[in-house]
Length: 102
Image 1 (cartoon, rainbow, N blue to C red):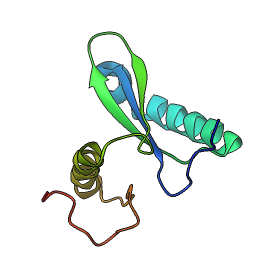
Image 2 (image 1 turned 120 degrees about the vertical axis):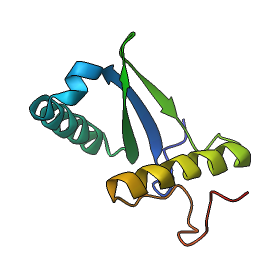
Image 3 (image 1 turned 45 degrees about the vertical axis):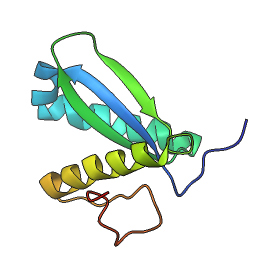
Image 4 (image 1 turned 30 degrees about the vertical axis):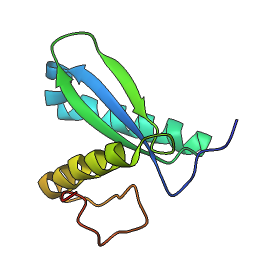
């Protein structure tokens, strides 16, 4: 199996119970434990937490096998999240490219 490209992170979409997400102390612990687990395995990943009222789950998007159209859409979503939470993390090497216009 080919190792994960360090420049293109996996995207982990973590669907968590709405009440758990609203508990900042629990989310701090969950986030730290998840980061430690990913770091221990050398995994380059972006984790998005999404509230749900149904089954909790984690889904993975692998940008290495995603189509160019999917990558554009993913980058647009990440750009929106970056603006909302004042963070920065791109899926492509073209950091200055506006991925929301394609």
